[in-house]
Structures are given as structure tokens and as C-alpha cells.
Length: 387
Image (tube, rainbow, N blue to C red; front, side, top):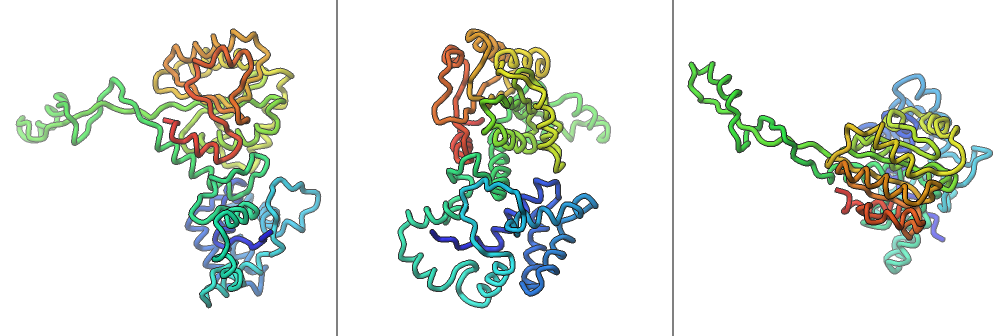
């Protein structure tokens, strides 16, 4: 199996995504500065390189304190004891010093970083299928293929996947269609004259309407609500679903709820950049009892939490496996309540097949679409239908 490491620039992108997940404000400018520092310092003094990166990425005392642990977690995982391997990636036995050195050698010659001359010749003669297999083994993307399209499952989450998820969330946000409302707003290319604003402007011209004010219908983006099932049957999928919900909360201003027996809103936690977000979410969900009451929680959501915001602009994403301890007919009644307000419902499930419980079968006609959501590739495939 090919264990050639990714180029340093790509590894830096994954490292920056991990830093952002821990609350550090690291953007494209900081990534460029970190790459420039590695080019300037080289790989002779790793302490100086880590220190330079630390000065670039850390903006407060909390960032400065947690930097050593995050740095070792990503670049020096062999030093960390008691950790569990959570991905199918075969980690190459290369440290940061080797990658920086290869990057410098690649700049001096024609061979790109992370690839030897003999490896280049072998790769040119290999098939596309072999290249794709090698890319998946490395946990990365093939040539010209975004990392989000990989069929890595939720249990094989990689730091660079967070960056791909954020890009995908922004694409979905831009795709959500803004809907016209009954209100009007001033616009220079509007089709309707705003008489009051025109008369107000005419005062400056002695009462002559020389500056007409035009208006057009005001549009508003859809209101997105995400309800995540965190019951025991969803234990292996809830963490990934919450990552997706957090990305949408930050990109599309979505309101996020978690439910089991009870329903709780976690929107403030999802919009926070704190490194302890996951611990706080675990504290919220720890008090939930056994069983999953999907129908009950949907009614609670419709009557209490989002009653004033449900309308034809509302989009409700339900992330669940469909196992419900309520009476089967109650789920259809709850979904009908949401549809009665004008909301459009999309159901994401962790399996390839849509939920087949009796409750879901009776309510299937009330759900606009069912989408599998076991990996980022599933979310990318569902994106064209999320509008």
C-alpha cells in the first residue's frame, strides 16, 4: 500500500481546520503565514518552526495553553499515549521535519513535494483505479476530486474533513432559495414607485420629483431547523450528525435541536467557537432517558420552540434512524402539523435504505425527501435537492 504523505500545504489545511475546531481563529492569511514560515525556517530546527506557527495561530492565552496538545495530536501522534485510532488511514511514518524537507527539495527540482522521481514514473504508468485506491488509503482525495466526495464513514472522520464540510455547508447555504414576502424594500432597479420616499426626496429639488424612489418585493432566506436524534440507537452516528448541524448553524444561521425522550435547543453551543462545545453538548444530552419519542418531540418543537417561525419559508431537517416509541399514528400527526404551517421536511437517515418502521411508512407521504447521511459524500449528493 502506498504511504506517500500529502504535501505540506494540504496537511497545513487539515491542521488549520483542527485548530479552528479548537476555537483558534486561523484563516487563509494565517495558513499562508505558516507556510511562509516553514519555507523560511526549513526543517533544521523544529522547535523554532513550531514556535513560529504558535505565534501566528494563537491570539489569546487559552489558545497559547492548548497549542502543544493540538500540535502533537496532529503532527506527532506517536507521542500521545492512550489514544484510539478512529480512521482507516494508514499513517505514513513521516514527521513534520521530513515533510518540510521534501517541500524544499521539491521547490529546487521538478519533482513535486511528497513524490520521488521514481514514484512519479510509476504513477504515470498506473491506472486511474489504482490512483483512486491509493488516495483512499491515504485518507485524501484523488486528482481533481474534492475530499468531501470520499466514501469515508462517520467513524473515519479526519481533520481535513472539517474544512470540506464547512465548504459544503456554505454551498448549501447559497443554494437555499430566498422567497419573496408581502413587504417591499427600496431598490434602484425596482419596478414599483415608492410615492412616500419620492415625495420626501423631492423636497431637496423644490418639490420636483427628480429623484424617484423605486421598490421591489423583499425576499428572505428560508429558516432552517435541524433536529438531531441522539438516542442510544444513534450513538455511533450522532457525533457526525452534530458536526453537520454545527456547520449549517454557522453557515446558514440554522437553529439546532437535539432530542431523545425530551427536546433541547443547542443553537448557542453550535454557533460557538469554544473548544469545549462537545463536552457541553454531552452534558445536555446526558440526562435523557431510554426510548425515543420522535412524534412527541416534533409536536413540542412545533407548538413551543418554532411556532412563530414556521411558515412556507421554513425548512425542517430531521436527522434520525426512525425508531420511535410513540404510537405509529402520532408521527404522521406531528409531521402533518409541521406541513400545515407550510414547512418543508427533509429526513436524513444513517443507513443506505430509508427507515422502514411502521410509523415512518405511515408518514412517508408527508416527508418531501429521504437522504442517506453516512458520509460527506452523501451530503454532497443531497446538496442539489436542498433548496
